[in-house]
Length: 147
Image 1 (tube, rainbow, N blue to C red):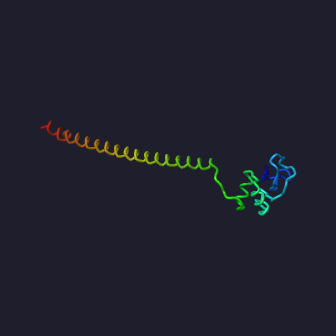
Image 2: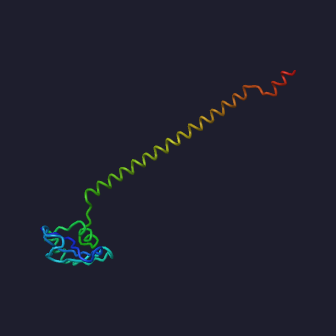
């Protein structure tokens, strides 16, 4: 099987890569069947031989994940979404919906608690007013005692 992969070259810690078509059983930096392009990750420079790449893809060559990403950026391959990405997005949407529902529920509970507290305070104020009306004033009781 023919693979489209990156072949490393350059200095230590200053790697550049050549995009090559090679046999899937050959080693990473072995002799390729054909060189198809160049990629420098430090400067993001990319040069692709589009005709040769299209020819290899029609012959059934399988790009590695990193090469597929480069080809998608270059517009040679349609961007595809992996099933894991779709599942992950669905899980994220479900999590967001659950968080939104929890926030609405918490807000409703807080509003109900505030209303209950206001009702308790109003009832306490009413009881205090009734108690004040039921007990005679101190000044009146003192006057009645002296008389």
